Image (cartoon, rainbow, N blue to C red; front, side, top):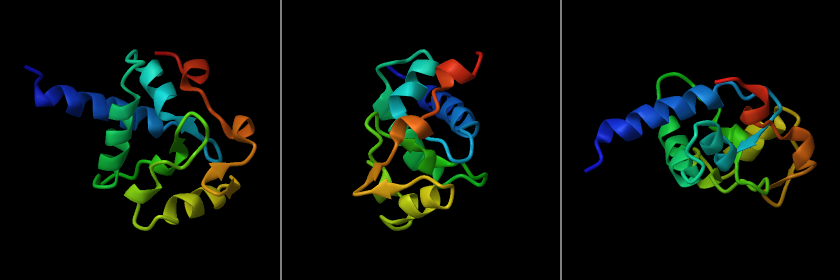
Length: 115
């Protein structure tokens, strides 16, 4: 049986990686999962992002999108427009819930961080 601490520990690792995403950059749920050595846990990274809104310390969850640059997590913010507004404030253009010039804004923790 899986211990609830496993998810808590994993979520903490996710929050640590997300906190390192540079201003004006985005990454994907899957990239974070791969960086943490759990490539098949992108969905769990999404659950962590949903939980991030209840933390005392701010985690830039708006910088985490799906592998195609879509704002699939937007409904977990205060309003469905909040995620796009936060990204726009960092110079990231979003049209129809898709990040424009996605590769230009994409940050891969696997290439930028060392474990």
